[in-house]
Image 1: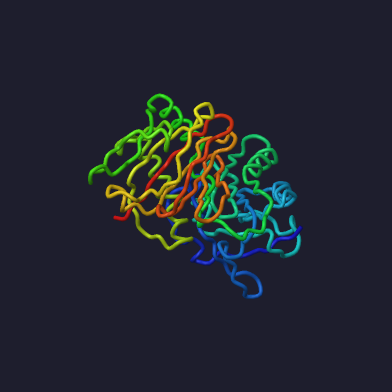
Image 2: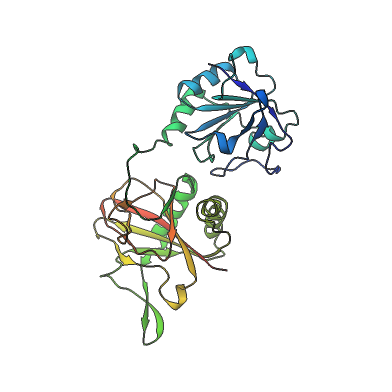
Length: 334
């Protein structure tokens, strides 16, 4: 095993902010001058798989991470060159002279951070418990399906790790305590009305009020974790939160939502992006189909989100076993 020792440049943090990286957020970029005059850039050069950031690193932790195929960034002046061998890009050793990077990533309680392939922080190790056990468990949540050749499919963005477990549990509890039969907006004699249409949408719902703490928590996650990805993927810069809805699909009711668009009434015409966030994954079937493009069934992991244009026709198909809980958000033009 070998390491590349690098000295952080003054632009190592972009930008430097004085708070810890929260769950699901993209880590700050680290741009550095390396040996032989090369410039290394975390966002550019870490191209596949997860990354482990270590502070107060011990050689056995680095070895364990490399054994599990994880790229390692060591942020610690005390880490010895002799412990890892000759230069290599699988291990970055960053002497953080100012302490700005350590303060941004680790604070007083953290010793290791795991970032997914999208450079988003998904797990923290505080030093409690066995490091190798923590790392194995954290990596198991990042398992991807085998790669496939795709020649069709809708323009849908799938994002994992948007809603953490505690928030998901709180949303499910709220829905179960206050759900009502879902309604659909229709145009009747030139007027928009909300009605029950069991042949189109048999489903139970709950709308979050805008002053509800749960609404505010969900809006914060979407602003911090989803909107930057929409900008990165589609150059979408500015949208407003229009509404947040909880929904439940049950197998014994054969719940579904027939093919529809989310912006085809006067009251919804300014909607631009729909976000469907999974609150659980202990069910079978379910998911979204975009019939204009293909018949693939799209389903995010628990805590993950599907983001797509409100112009796209889509349908929610029934679950075959269990109950599916979902948080639905609509982002509208300002």
